[in-house]
Length: 386
Ligand SMILES: Nc1ncnc2c1ncn2[C@@H]1O[C@H](COP(=O)(O)OP(=O)(O)O)[C@@H](O)[C@H]1O
Ligand SMILES: [Mg+2]
Image (cartoon, rainbow, N blue to C red):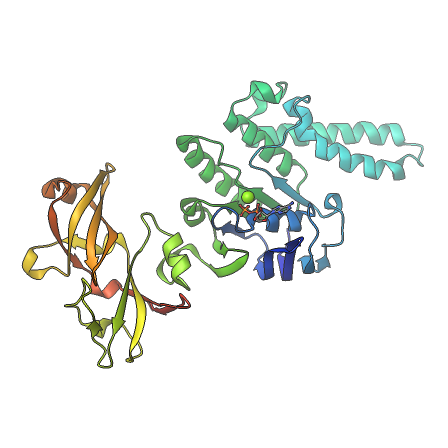
């Protein structure tokens, strides 16, 4: 177990800068989730830590040891891939034992000089066997040990891949979208099992996903990555409530936060023909100057209202009844431009309202939950939490 530190890590493929000056500190025993859209550099970052790619610049530490010049097998790091990467010709038992046997053969060169080689060998074999049995039991795959990967379901393969990583007792686990080949139910079950396993084993873990629900539910902390740049590192709740910028605000949350470009005049009032014209901006602490910014609000902070008290009027474009809640897609007019925003209400409210596509509908916005972002940099200017 050890902390992982990245200092000014840059990775280029030819001229293409995939990761730029990454500084990151993952604490000992922490479950860190790395989340971001496809192609933002998540797998590359893990592969650099594992030693499957070389850094172009910067350094990587495991505890006090700089590891970025070391070959992968001596880094004491285990990686689980989306594709499982099991050896197809080996049984589950041998797949799990594989890494342990490699550890043995490195040590054997010392032992061979000794007369008790045979005894040591036998002892080691018994140790490996007991380790494999123990790991298989903890993942509930003992009954699969003699099967080959082709005779396993996706979920079972995934457990074997985890087992192989755990067996070696590494200082760090790296997991690259390990659940993305599983169906929804299995994914959600396995998600909680991985978290429980990590808490039990207390191994520093970096878990990559493009799925913000996985990130929110699994991580002690989350790193949000976009285009090779770290946007924010924080706890799930802070990432959700206090996003550092518009990218993070829009990426975390489903449906995502609504954004409306607006301008304020010198008196601090909204100018133009925005849908929120009637709103006083006393609630949000913005510099009172002529400027453009982006107003943000989450779908759950809209509630249906009577026309007289409404902050927002829109045309219903789509109603999605999801069982426990209902998502309403609205077309609104913001300063002459048609825009879409989403509202999320409880299923009961959805039923009471029985919206039809094309209906005019009226909404109250929780003005204590407004966000504001700089229109050019995207930086958060205001969030509604202290
Ligand atoms: N071996 C490689 N050679 C060239 N470009 C690569 C290589 N591996 C990844 N890339 C590029 O690096 C970027 C980030 O890829 P990746 O780390 O796989 O993203 P993610 O895992 O977030 O989807 C992509 O633009 C990808 O095309
Ligand atoms: Mg990837």
